[in-house]
Length: 219
Image (cartoon, rainbow, N blue to C red; front, side, top):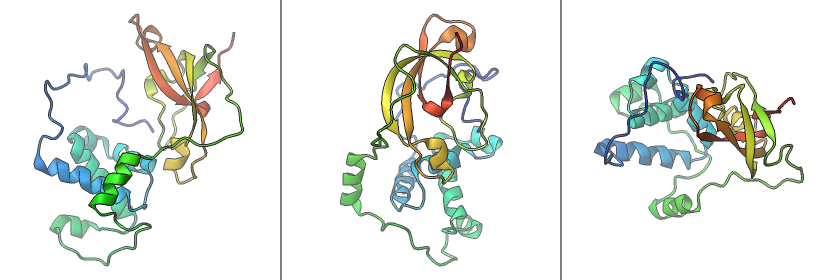
């Protein structure tokens, strides 16, 4: 979707100005927000792409006026409300008012969570298909604007690029976020010239693009 989360190359917002010596957390509550979000994700009630979409689908005013972990917390509240795990009154009062919902997986204890985080969640999948594009091949990123989640940034849509590498066969986030299953596709690292994206610059920008995002360049 075209939302405030996808700001790369947008005018009127200025450059990204990283905070010098930025701490991992600016407040104690941010640690809890991250821990609760990760723990709830382990309960199996949504997948990674659905959680990303919940954050980017916040109203633009709320998104742009919130800090990083405020966005995480608002996304978690949205996911839980949509599944009947919490309601607005509970969020307002901080007190239990509805019956607990049975999660798909039991909440892991501290040791199990450590093992799960160390193992990660690989999204590569086996396939017998062959990639449609090869390294060095010119492509054009599709100029599409889906209503749901996508990992194709707006600033590359419709722009030419070169396949830099084939990165394997991976879960397709657009389908996974929409509840359509993993629908894996080939993933590529694509090199875009900065001047093709922003009208200036001599460097290249590398973007990971799933095969449905790309079209063969016309000679």
